[in-house]
Structure formats: structure tokens, C-alpha cells
Amino acid sequence: MPQVKIPPPYRGPTSGRALIEVPGTSIRECIEAVERECPGFGELVIDATGRLQKFVTLFINGDEVARDDLDAAVRSDDQIEVLAAIAGG
Image 1 (cartoon, rainbow, N blue to C red):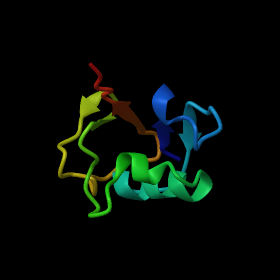
Image 2: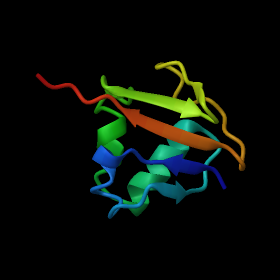
Image 3: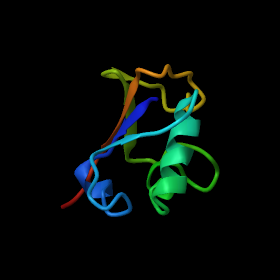
């Protein structure tokens, strides 16, 4: 099954877990699977319109995913990394 790598700022809903193995054939399906297992995670990554949140970048096996490509296919041995850009000032 694909794995979703969770950044430290988003580990509240995952109870501190950094890597979660979930079923799914697309990025969106994998994020939704994490949400089902860890309620509250999905809204950190995907906004109410179904698009990627403004300060989130996704990678599959180290390659950046286009912001509008949440339905990109993933294989069972892929790792999806969620990167949270934290702004401050």
C-alpha cells in the first residue's frame, strides 16, 4: 500500500505518527484514507473546494506533484510526502 509521510506540524490528527500506510490509487484517495483513519488531517491538506491548501506541497517518491494534480496515480510502493510551508513573521 502507498505510504503518506506526515510533516511534524500536521501530526496532531495522526497522534504523532509520521508515516501512514493507506489504500489508494491516487493522491486524493490516499489523503482521504488518512482522513478516515485520522479525522482532521484531510482539511490540513485539501481545502473545501477540493484543491490543495495554499501552503502545502506534495511529492511522490521525492518528485514534486503539480498543485492541480491531486488525482495523479500512485502505485502500491509509492510514498506521498506532504510538505507544510509554515509562514511567520
